[in-house]
Length: 502
Image (cartoon, rainbow, N blue to C red; front, side):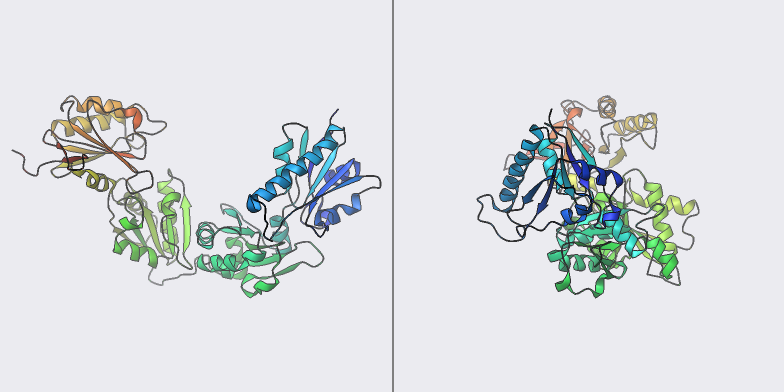
């Protein structure tokens, strides 16, 4: 029978923090495998050494390259891939011979662990078992003596190899954070912490639980002294606020704070107005749906609070609470915040009693309807109606009644939220209602991701519209009886509605 492969987590370095199961398996295994650099020394083996026994076969899996360059035709990735394939074959020979193999892994095998590359190559052929270990993040928190997170706080674990701007964005979006893989990346990690406003809260922890562990404020660390086995930790801000007396929001205005609801336009920064840019730059906090918050340029010291797409009321209340402490808070929306967006949500929460004394302003943005119309000409050149087909906040009966009225009034319609994964019948029903009043030849513009990388704008007719080609990222413009389709010099259709209505 084949042997069994064990991926055994050793914990952060202190042999006493190894699990009882890990120690038992190490002592029972026929083969002990571990990774090491070309110098031959293995941290994993040194941690497991108290539990090794005589007569065990040891397999040293020596990396062909670590930080140096390589002449491998596939570069670094090619050299490492070939190494993993060769290592897997070596372990497979033992397993085929019926020998159990324990592959040692610092920390936890599935948490940035080296074991996972053997697992993906061998788990389909042999029985495998992963024994979890204490992670370096947990160890760092324990030696620092501060909790990682509590209550509703969010912890984000990041590799220091991310580009500094992306690292700063993600740090600003979270409450607490651990940044691993320091060493040569320390400079960019420090820069990202400063840019995100987290540097003063960050701690440097080196070789947690080892005899020579080192803990100090990250801002005071000499970059030349930082090894790979270190991490940056931003622990629970609520704990720091209570214990150190540092307010979670560092900006306090004796006259009370302010919420500015900002429209980002339909896509990238070119759609952002100068007024909106200025408000975003001045804000202490940026609050919004995750993808929209990600579009806001990062500013040093600015805190970011991203959330899901269906928690508008909670998001608005949270923004008002932040502003109650004296902060300037920007709540962001795609398009214009007053069109099916966050302006109404914020004002509704104010009406419900949240954020007493907080000022609320609305900064407009280019709407999705305006953006879609600009791509084909001027279909909104005369009276038009803006209507959402989503029946999540109002019944379909109300939507159908309004569609019927707008169709009878011969208004151009801009239809938001035309479809989603769970709403697949509404657009066909809307089409049938409008065909009571419009000819099948009525122009229809189907605009998807206008201004974005997947922009697609098509012109069809009400009779030929295929609802199955429309999703949540689309906006539809349905013309009136006066709307015209013409072919331009380049062969592309131009759609426009005359301003005069004879």
